[in-house]
Length: 64
Image 1: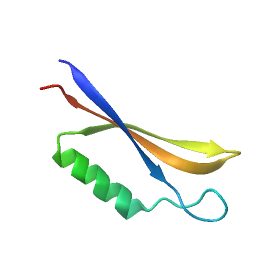
Image 2: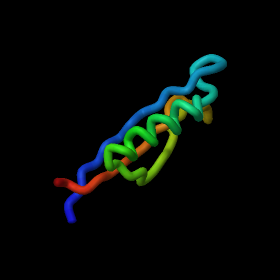
Image 3: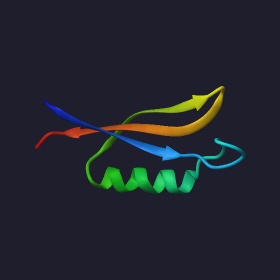
Protein backbone atom coordinates (compact mmCIF):
# COMPACT_ATOMS: atom_id res chain seq x y z
CA UNK A 1 0.00 0.00 0.00
CA UNK A 2 1.19 3.53 -0.75
CA UNK A 3 0.64 6.43 1.63
CA UNK A 4 0.54 10.20 1.56
CA UNK A 5 1.63 12.19 4.60
CA UNK A 6 0.78 15.57 6.06
CA UNK A 7 2.26 17.58 8.92
CA UNK A 8 0.10 20.09 10.78
CA UNK A 9 1.54 22.64 13.20
CA UNK A 10 -0.39 23.98 16.19
CA UNK A 11 0.92 27.08 17.93
CA UNK A 12 0.95 27.49 21.68
CA UNK A 13 0.06 30.68 23.51
CA UNK A 14 0.97 32.04 26.87
CA UNK A 15 3.77 33.66 28.79
CA UNK A 16 6.52 34.98 26.45
CA UNK A 17 6.93 32.68 23.42
CA UNK A 18 5.43 29.47 24.70
CA UNK A 19 2.61 28.18 26.77
CA UNK A 20 -0.57 26.23 26.54
CA UNK A 21 -1.98 24.28 23.65
CA UNK A 22 -5.69 24.81 23.04
CA UNK A 23 -6.58 21.14 23.51
CA UNK A 24 -10.15 21.52 22.27
CA UNK A 25 -9.04 23.18 19.02
CA UNK A 26 -6.34 20.52 18.65
CA UNK A 27 -8.87 17.71 19.14
CA UNK A 28 -11.42 19.35 16.82
CA UNK A 29 -8.85 19.69 14.03
CA UNK A 30 -7.69 16.08 14.42
CA UNK A 31 -11.32 14.94 14.24
CA UNK A 32 -11.86 16.98 11.06
CA UNK A 33 -8.78 15.41 9.49
CA UNK A 34 -9.86 11.94 10.64
CA UNK A 35 -13.19 12.42 8.88
CA UNK A 36 -11.18 13.15 5.71
CA UNK A 37 -9.38 9.81 6.05
CA UNK A 38 -6.20 11.00 7.80
CA UNK A 39 -4.73 8.84 10.58
CA UNK A 40 -2.54 10.32 13.30
CA UNK A 41 0.94 8.79 13.21
CA UNK A 42 2.96 10.91 15.61
CA UNK A 43 2.93 14.10 17.67
CA UNK A 44 5.97 16.06 18.83
CA UNK A 45 6.81 19.56 19.98
CA UNK A 46 9.29 22.17 18.89
CA UNK A 47 10.95 24.01 21.72
CA UNK A 48 13.35 26.75 22.66
CA UNK A 49 15.24 26.16 25.88
CA UNK A 50 12.64 23.71 27.12
CA UNK A 51 9.61 25.88 26.33
CA UNK A 52 7.13 24.48 23.82
CA UNK A 53 6.67 26.71 20.79
CA UNK A 54 4.54 24.50 18.55
CA UNK A 55 3.04 21.03 18.52
CA UNK A 56 3.41 19.12 15.25
CA UNK A 57 1.07 16.30 14.25
CA UNK A 58 2.08 13.90 11.48
CA UNK A 59 -0.76 12.12 9.69
CA UNK A 60 -1.09 9.60 6.87
CA UNK A 61 -3.77 8.19 4.59
CA UNK A 62 -3.74 5.69 1.73
CA UNK A 63 -3.17 7.06 -1.74
CA UNK A 64 -6.23 6.66 -3.91
